[in-house]
Amino acid sequence: MIPLISRNNMAGRPEPLTKLDKNALHPHEVAIFLDFDGTLADIADDPAAVAVPRQTIDALARLEKVTGGAVAIVTGRPISEIDHFLSPLNLPIAGVHGLERRGADGSMSSVPTDERALEGVAESLERYRDRNEGIFIERKQGSIALHYRKRPELEAASKTAVHEAVNGNAGLHILNGKKVIEIKAGKATKADALKAFLKEPPFNGRIPLFAGDDVTDEDAFLAIADDRGVSIKIGEGETAAAYRADSTESFRSWLDSLAGMFEQQQLTS
Image 1: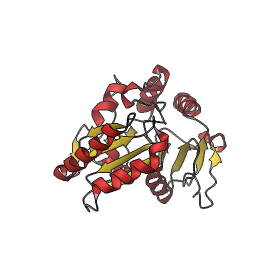
Image 2: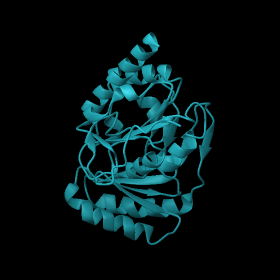
Image 3: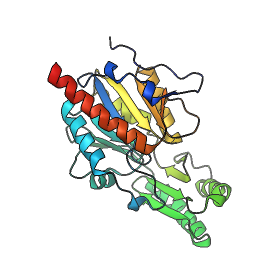
């Protein structure tokens, strides 16, 4: 039985990440799952303008090597975008909140989506965007994201526009994030993606560690608690995660130090 490292955060008060005993983690026992925006990359007004520091990409490469490939990205972005931002890495990835997934063996899988219903929503939201400068519509395979980061005063109006566009369509699902609202044409979640990875090598039989920054990560935090894993929330906000990192920068630094500790463990084992 894998030992319990984290605790369930039933009181809603996560411990500082500095309280997590990294020495209780071992590279051949842990499976690392990471969100992208707000976790590895700083959030930007334009999703295309983000960048991941080279040191962080190097840390991911070191973690991939020392864990035997048990490092995956679980994100709302498409897989192709993550490959671009993390080049030259080619990690296992669950994209579009679990609607698409690439396993460690390179195999691709996806969840059926109602693209026709999604197209009608896109047309409605694009009319809303055209009436409101600063609103940005991001279209993906299987989902649409409405970003109001440049117009935070339009949060309520944007949520109304999304609900009116979806208009009770049972095949579409609304996710509220940090100054973004996403409409998914499929039922998969990040928790579903984690569970799928954990059934496959090299992730199966390991302690899951998941880090994310947004409300769309909360179902994965709960799944981590069920699997006796380690859950880390980046930044402020209520959370089910057991630990909290103050910022994206501090979490990236912690991830780099984890890679160094794992490498040292291998040298001394």
